[in-house]
Length: 273
Image (cartoon, rainbow, N blue to C red; front, side, top):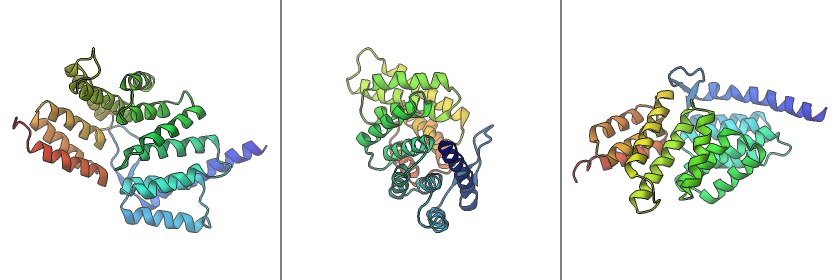
């Protein structure tokens, strides 16, 4: 029937789009034990992919193709073009539920990770994605993450994240989100908020979750950056320096390199107080 034909078409387009990363990206080493290839992109590689995709599609790329293009731009460090590709993907007519969900999740993620995060819009997007797939761990994790970094209700974000980690304990991104929630709770306690929480306990839990993430994926740049922040808070200068070196050696994006550079400046003052 029509629904089956639509799903079959989407499947084949997704299989075709899968190979674009091999054609235009540069493969990098994956985390320990991972069977999934990781890729990095320079701006020229991302542009070459988009130009090629738009050319072969006659100017109307399919949703899976737009998702690959958006990923390439995001990794290359051009958030504006990544967002544009994801907005186009989310607006593709007659998209499958799976495709619509994927576009929403990725769009919300990029909006949160951008240099100027659009928190309100990202949370709305994740709430739309939750309506599509209420039990999906990825969108629950992203919603918890959005609340955590947008000065939201951290005591609402924490149980969401704990549920996700309990359901999928071996996912580095989920562990990193939980660690970041603990870190933000630590900062709020230090600022005089969140009564009945101990700042040292929260800092220890944050550090443990970042380490858990790195055990799963030793080249997860954000987790090294987050762990460095914990070490700086504890004035563990040598450990902070080592974490930042690991982050720098793990093929950071341009945005991640900016974070590393800022923390290196803070490291210069570590222990001075």
